[in-house]
Length: 318
Image 1 (tube, one colour):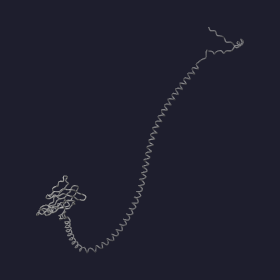
Image 2: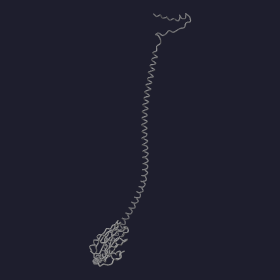
Image 3: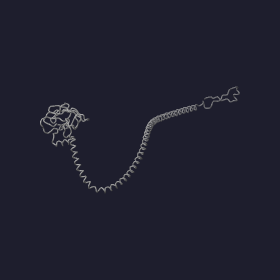
Image 4: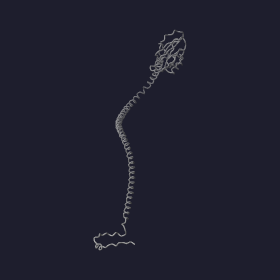
């Protein structure tokens, strides 16, 4: 059994002398620590809440930063696209300005051409008006002349009979003139050969040559002579021909001619010129006529008499 000292009353203490007063301890034992614990728990929970809130804010800030970075990147790409489009727009604007300048120049030229066309149209209208006026004047003059002609026709009918007689005489004169012209034509076709001998008719075409054959006066042999690389002559109508050179521009040629084993050259002969030579047994000369001259080629014919005559000495050839 515990013994607890009884507290002294103030009166008792005062009576015993100067004794200090000590407050009695609180009832129920030592002071409680629960409030401190509760305060610590609350502070821990508060700090934990603050930490979680701070972490949440940090996460949100990170998300916001990422979102801002993405938005900035997207805006950067958009700005780059806008910059490229702006450059393209500048280039198109430059092209459009150049095209506009060219169009202005063409428009100025077109306006000038339109003005010239208007002036030409006005000039044409003026000329048409003058032409119409002139046509009207001419029609009036023709009407006057027609009346005069009708009057002259009446007076001319009486002279028709005498005119018909004159026409008959004129027809006879025309016929004789035609005959004279035909004879003149034949004379013109007969030319002098290179030996100074009167030549026969000269054929200018294949048809002319056929007509000469039908006459039966001479023999005609056609040839197409080319310049030989081996310089060997070609035998034609009993003679040997060798083409030496041609000049198509001046229509001249030169040939080598072998007749009765005698050689001669015919130089600078012209187209349709009778190149004459004599053969043994003939009094009339044979003739070479070239009617076409090409480069390294001539085309023509050789004309020889049909009948041999008494032998005569060979004449000098040129």
